[in-house]
Length: 289
Length: 165
Ligand SMILES: Cc1cc2nc3c(=O)[nH]c(=O)nc-3n(C[C@H](O)[C@H](O)[C@H](O)COP(=O)(O)OP(=O)(O)OC[C@H]3O[C@@H](n4cnc5c(N)ncnc54)[C@H](O)[C@@H]3O)c2cc1C
Ligand code: FES
Ligand code: FES
Image 1: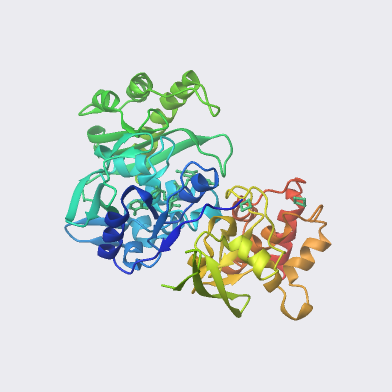
Image 2: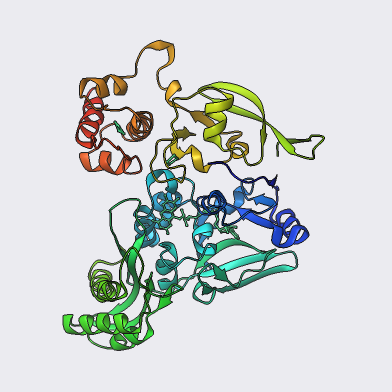
């Protein structure tokens, strides 16, 4: 398989990358790891005339913790960078675990978190856990930068709020006092299989009372979605197994999964019920796992 | 960035220095040249195989700075400045590596098509983790599909090579 022809640029700064994108407009595409982009180009789904690579923007690979700001993950950090980062493992092991269980080892060495977000497919593994942790994203364009909640970024399959000349530079997880978080996915194989359905949760427990939580579902709707009705079942309540099951039922009800080769709508809904219950139980009893 | 040369037809080519198995090759590649094709066609290193060409099967696995990647998903221009190891670079001086010997001893090769990728994924694991568990070995080769389904012996071969450390 060969790729269509294109002009390749690897700018040395974000500003230069943005001006290349602005100059070439819709003919240009950003290349990070390429595991989604090159895939689409090989299938003829995309044929950009200009490819703007982020390969030289090493500052975007950084993962760090900033007092007052929170955990900051550069958009070019690879899935394996997330899986093995001591900073992430210490703060939110749940993110490392989510990254470690996606794709396969070779892809994890090149696929980036930024690409996983901007590609915007329902089954993407990283958006749910990042959304559950209240992540913000920073977009930089020729005229400046803006920050938004990750959960407000997605508009539809392959559709987001990013402008053609903007670059996702970092993901920020502000300090919010969670006591636990986790991501559980179900795939048809343990490796190299996309999620049929997945659930991420974060919880803030005060003894047996749940004082705060977020539930984010993957492959449950055209975009990664918050299960707000399910959250309402648990908020400020004393947690029991019955209540967790009720939250699972609620999440299944509010989800809007599709029929596809990987799973029927009905099957996915039942997976969401079970995954939501299990994820809640795990985050409540085991912390950030 | 690599030096760009535009020919009479307006096609751009990029001058890159590619470090493969310790040798530096100066090459002209097009922006859309995939690393796997440059290795196989320009450098005649055909030990790197092509299967799915979509990142699923691991036949085209090479090490980039010691980490296994699918060379069918990497642009050659982006491999500049990285140390590439192909299966031809695993055993310098015509003496097989002990992992290769172990594959032979354990009949871990049937048709052989997945073998270069399996060996490289195995090498990367043993370099990072000289005494892996069976679970870790299975995880390390989970991006390498063996169409002959000889996984049991492949896992045994990697574990046996680790015990010789
Ligand atoms: C075999 C295989 C298995 C896979 N398994 C999984 C899986 O289990 N789970 C999963 O979620 N995904 C999976 N994927 C998909 C893919 O690997 C991930 O989505 C990956 O994280 C994409 O990142 P990338 O850097 O390769 O993106 P690219 O292909 O480089 O980019 C993807 C899109 O995002 C844009 N983009 C990238 N970075 C930025 C940025 N910083 N700013 C603005 N736009 C940007 C690009 O223009 C492009 O449109 C798999 C892919 C393959 C080939
Ligand atoms: S040929 Fe590259 S992964 Fe299959
Ligand atoms: S030996 Fe035939 S593909 Fe593995």
